[in-house]
Image (cartoon, rainbow, N blue to C red; front, top):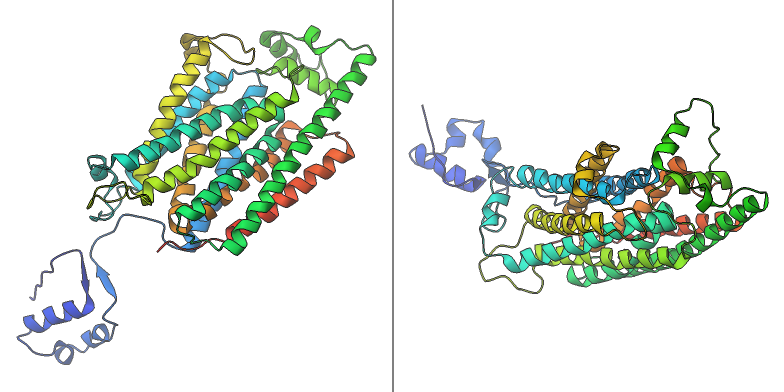
Length: 452
């Protein structure tokens, strides 16, 4: 029985044939065994691999698939967080739950995709890379996690003031205008500039339309409340009740009629029930928080890009670049640590007139905890998929996942009745904002290139 041993995990077909010739005593194996002739006819540049390589997205089609899946995940988790706040759960409690599973998602990705198959000196596996001297890239990844954590924390409060749909449109558009431009130059211009930057311009227009939608909708709500007050209904501040009383009212089968979405009664009920009180607050408070979040979001993707591609040559010679899974792990760890510190601080020193809480109260608050855990998983896996796609097609094109407001707007209208019974002007502005957003996303995806 003939046995041949091959060194290494991959061999060219020509090398394998030479080994067979030696084994046959210098003869021509294709003459003695005709079946081998079909093997010899294979082009010699084809590679035969005896082991699996670490899984990395390398094709443009795979990158776009990652972006689309990330788009759904990243557009859905904000709706879950908004739902919990509207039900009266403190945002500090929700965010602490969210950040636990957000980190868990990164660990799962690192220990599965980052450990599948055999690594190489240029692309080590996740565990092997943890002990390497790659701290400059690690710090870039962790810096990205810090700004993302600040952005996510800010939007949690902005959703209450500005609404889910407009908050997501403004933050996503700022992210693209600043972040995509930075990524274009960091990625050595692999995206098509003649397509990319018109798309960035469309996002900039969407920011302006989003601000106009918020102002118009705020004016509509104010008019509804004035009309209700003139009809003899008490003000929201006098009507405020405790969460327990509201739950008793909700559970009093048929004793109270639920207000229709978009009406003044609905706005008053929502204000009484929700955790973050917005009546009487300036419109500019919500917009200021939203714009701050947008700037934070615009920086995390370029920082991650620098962590995985080392464009500034900060690594020592011979040290491999961080693979996307290792970078995402460090990114998520810093995001988790900052979120933990800030939210525990906010338990005892709350902002925006929220009630004080405690760590013990948080541990005992199981109302909506499962939904918060789900939101963290969706956000974690969504970010991971975005980075996997960006590593293949360029991080500028991967910013197409900033189309997530399209998903968030769908949930906002379906679940929360946003913009119901608004003015015609608000509807026109909302439609224009979404149309411009769809055009911008399509253009951004069309600009995607392929990393060499």
